[in-house]
Image 1 (cartoon, one colour):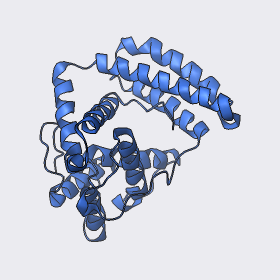
Image 2 (image 1 turned 60 degrees about the vertical axis):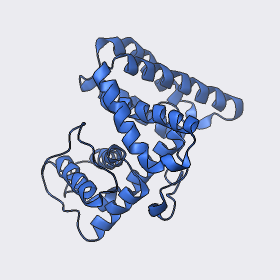
Image 3 (image 1 turned 45 degrees about the horizontal axis):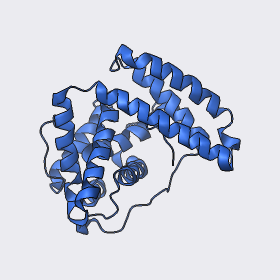
Length: 245
């Protein structure tokens, strides 16, 4: 089974193809062990497609489950897609908040659960530092990222020591600083993109937003498109979202 390349996008309404792609990605994450997406599992994943969950958003949710699973120690059995449900919907909720998409497609049924599994601020900072270190280790980041990541890691490490106890204005100041650091990281990542990658991400963002376009103004759609592209840029370089809301 072969994963779709970046230029081969299919309508998200094609649930069978969407489920096959999720199955292929899960197989990849399970080191080649095939866990079929059939029966109740097929219904679950088809529900993601009906809600408009973009393929890469679903993959990010699966990655989040595997990241937590690996931290528990040696794996004992392959992961079923059902185990990833909460993480996929959490990432979808995050994607919707970032893009401003508030209405699900008509076929989606009940809304997903916003903020159902939000991490605490200290846990968020810990995850950001870990993801920055991991991103650097992949070799996908050029040397132009080094100074920025060093500065950010030092600042975030210092923030982690007090994040659990900050309240009121101090907390708002910390959240504001995280937003500034996040913007700087994203700006650096966008500068590192070539024109082909930028165009590909814009097309992918358009496809991901297609199920929601009918309920959006042109201004809202433009903002959503930029936010969706930003998420794809982060994924390209393995970068975390530093801001916290």
